[in-house]
Image (tube, rainbow, N blue to C red):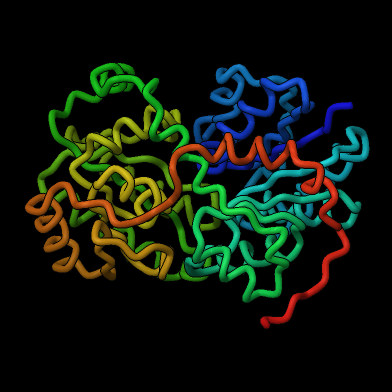
Length: 375
């Protein structure tokens, strides 16, 4: 009898992490795989990226709108819990798979743990900053199985009292896509999105929910610096956290500037191709501390959203000071490609995940968790 698995996705970013895992399980007769799609995926303003999930050829997609505005993360969490609870009561899954540090992941972990369903959390044990870190660690404590991307994350989970027998280092699943030989050419992607820049950098800047009072000033400083640099930029909308409207209002300043191409969202594979060919990435996105180092691309990380997330030669972390941003841009252009010094796995997370699921002991992991003291 096949095991029933639900993957929960709320953003374009977590779908990129889940994609290879969904594909390898959905193509197998051993598993019945379903996808609960909510959050940013359902919002037209941010590109309605559920369309990309549908285009990927996946089956059993269940769409759920969990919010009509972004001002109340707690209410949106409550709506997601209610919707997902009704969904799993009908489907009765054996395993719920969530990723990262978003409220959708927290909703999935809460519903799973309260209904005695195994919850697997991808990329637990990471550290960053702001409310994201609190959510990530909360999801880890509510989950029964941990699929980490590196040994450091595994050590942190053990430090948090998690059972080492339930922690599996499978690497970062997006490497499965990043290292694929099936990625399109840069010429194809530029033509697809009508990007005619010979050289360009990527901008991804998200709101920090604990600093919304400073956000308007911060994004103004960033945009001023980008305009002053006289370089070409591919700009991608922020996620839909509280404060994103402040960022989007500031982006109006560059809507008619020929050096900027602004997109609500990009298909994950196409984004990777642009990143791989970019001069650098600037902002505060996890793409700058996870994907960019893999491609040896310099990252200018601004502010504290990704505090302590990854240490790498490729990353320069600065504050919202114009002269520091100007200097960092000049340095990124001068240095160019930087030797990779971060290990996120071997690009075979999907195979490791699939092998885990085929082990009888995996399904015997207890949903009655006990805190494990450090020995």
